[in-house]
Image (cartoon, rainbow, N blue to C red; front, top):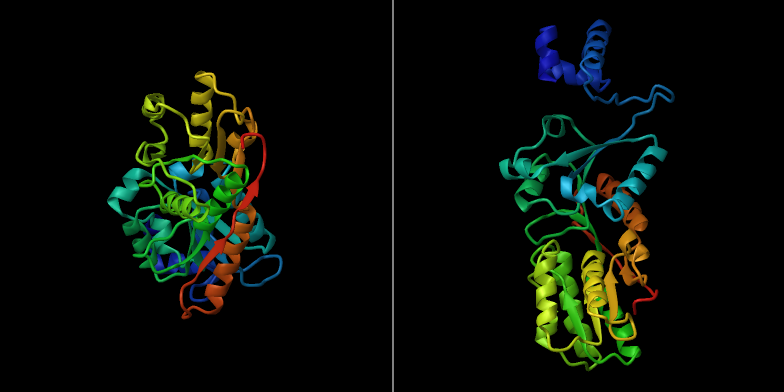
Length: 327
């Protein structure tokens, strides 16, 4: 935006007014700004719809490189959100934030300079970075993330109840010993699933062998996980995992050691990504309706735009148990 202002020898504010279709600059200036913006391939929005001459809304979505690579989970949420916003003739621009940008804690120029109607934050970014976004004083909806330090609306999975339902299912199948796998330091959701695990174990009078509770091995350290599993004298009757990646790793280990799933050991995993559907056997899972999560996020944004001063809300979606072959 500053580049356009310098080239045309006008203020940055005049450029912003021209690009957003607001009153305050001459027709000639507006046309010059738009022409140069197009030549520079600068992404901008007019606040008026040419077809309907009605005010439209423009939203931003901020997420990390890592999150946006998880197509079969966060990609489902993003696609559905884009579909909803497009159907309303609104606009959505995606800002992909690298680890370096998070460390610098600096917002992209366009994110900070345009007066968005609202900003969605998809999954985890550092709390400091989210606070930086909140400092823009624009409505923000967090999707699949929350933290007690962050004052914002959020759309979440009811992880504790979801895991309890999973434990109940295994208990009804007369399974006595259950293990838990997942790096609970990585995500608040994973830690909540551990709480649900212990709560379910207690509720259904099952015994906990702490050797079967694995909470510190990162998902991409498969060798460390295999070594730990190999050190166990005996496998539990079932493993529950915080996501499908861990579930697939456990499945691979069990196959390599000659175990049959689920006859020898059952596997129940959180989430319902492609991994769960293409594994052999297919994974039984505890899964949130990701499209519904997108719908709730858009609904929450509309609510916040309508009631900007009401208390912040957490909207919890109860995941469903999908029974397949692994448990």
